[in-house]
Image (cartoon, rainbow, N blue to C red; front, side):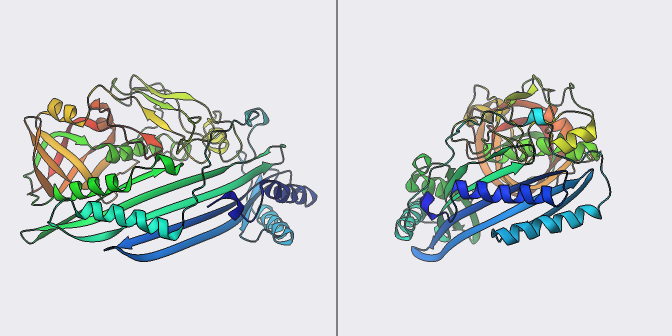
Length: 446
């Protein structure tokens, strides 16, 4: 794929955005903004060595928001013709006229809007043919199945590539955007032993295809992970230390982000209300937001309303340093935006000195969680309960796989009970963290 596959150039998207902003002003809007985007993607999947699906997607769209004083209206369209864009503006204006006033509505403060837009090297198109994608998927699946003769079936392997670009503009004079890309490869296989079956998977993801792991490496990991889960046992109910494997630990950081984001805070639907400047984690935990990492999956020079992103400490020695706020949620809380309209950007959790094996030895006896099931986190109370699978550990060594268990606790005490964080960092996520060792949780089984 290449940028030539886009139907619109950057300059054309800019011109379309100005049509929206100017028409909104003519219709009587006191403020307006728009985001116009286009994306192109390809996905090829293979199962048992044969191509199963070939998918292409090509989409485009525009979102229009207008303000009439403190009244707000929004409309969207997938038609980027001038007539359709003007119609979307007019529909947004109609909505705004019938909407109640909200004294927190409006564009961001002008002094918060990004001025110097740095290039973060986020766009790396991949000129990958269907045949080449299928060849990579086949190699990935074959490597997985070759790990062990007990691997008898496959859910398939897939290779996907996606590129997009956008322009965001508002009536404060801001108008900018950039292209981006994301590519991935994955495989899932099924193992069978003594009449019992298990599955597991692995994947690689990056903005630049040259940074993807080799198909054979992805396959071997998926195969190995599946085999080691065979002949799982149940556990008796107990309280014990728990390690969340790195790729699972990102979910805990996601729970934290949700709890200290503006929407949850101003609605008072978070267990971390009024926690700024207070201990929310153990002193071991340091979290920094770093939006300007070149090639980063969560990198951005500005947020979804044009506010400059900030590199900052979020948690320092366990103490919460800042929330995640948009202009609207900040006004609701009587605070200033943190440049997080649209979410967080590259959260980096400082690792300790141990890899996963080192964490297992430090834990001694306990549970290593490698898979979670269900959605059991109550963000109002912090209560946490999830179906889980993983491995029982004794003497710092994995003893056997476990399945059909539930782990439970409260996120507030879990965060403060973090004993250590591994250096086996999960880099395929916008939240980069190693495996997390928590002092104790309830494990419910037999």
